[in-house]
Length: 257
Image 1: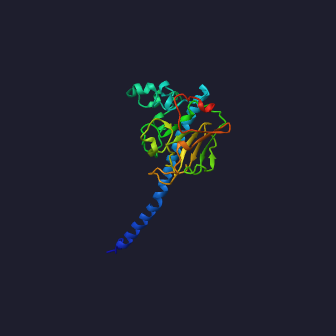
Image 2: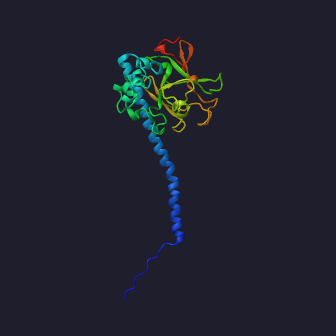
Image 3: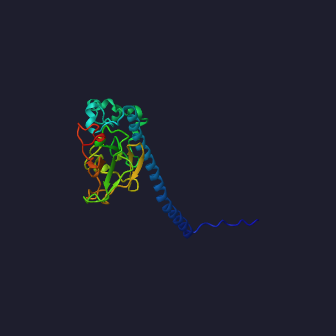
């Protein structure tokens, strides 16, 4: 009778070692996979805000200026449609406010275009909002926009954006969830959800990532948090605030006074 060699089984210690190695590899790989997923979401977000900015830029090519913001809703020129009289009168007739916007014919798949995939729809309509005082702006403006290095210091040195910022990826807590009017104004803050940065569409059709000055906490309002009120338009050697506007200021930014 031939001898059949017995098959050696794993010992408990060997199994524990294998399990420990697998757990170690998972621990090493998961953060990398998480970062890769977030990098992918950030790219989608940048693509989204670029599409919206280009829709405005293309619209301006046809009508000489970009659309309006909150105040222009009664005349149906609110860029996002949320405040357009057509939408306000019959909101149940529309799947999305953008259907009543002059930008609708310039947009493709509009539902997810306005939403950052990292934000997970805290505002049901859009994560990108328009600086309110730029309503009716021409795209060829030579003005500059600056922000303070240290918002809590009135005498802080100021830095310039490469072009006029137009659409801001807004912070959901301050105050895009509570106020879904599509405008970036007053105490609204910039999103920092993409590795402490947010995306910005510029009036010249470009896009940039922006690391806004911040107090450091995402759950507290702090003196060093930059808001819309900290922005300044530089035109004719004069600085103008951009945080607030009025219904009569359509096109104000073209000849600020």
